[in-house]
Length: 67
Image 1 (cartoon, rainbow, N blue to C red):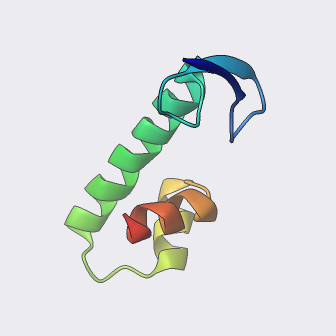
Image 2 (cartoon, rainbow, N blue to C red; image 1 turned 90 degrees about the vertical axis):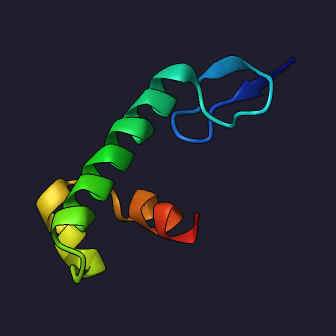
C-alpha cells in the first residue's frame, strides 16, 4: 500500500492498485453503467449523443471506449 493522490479529485488515499479514491471510483462506476445502458438501447449513438443524453463527461466516455 502507498499514499497517493486521486487522479480525479486530488484527495489523498491509500492505494493498492487503483488510481482513484473510493468516492471517485463509485462515481465512475455509476457513469459506466449509465453509458453501457444507453449504448445497449442506442447502439449507433455517437460520442456527442452519448454525452448529451447521459451527462457523463467526455473524458470518461473516451476512457470507456478504450477499455
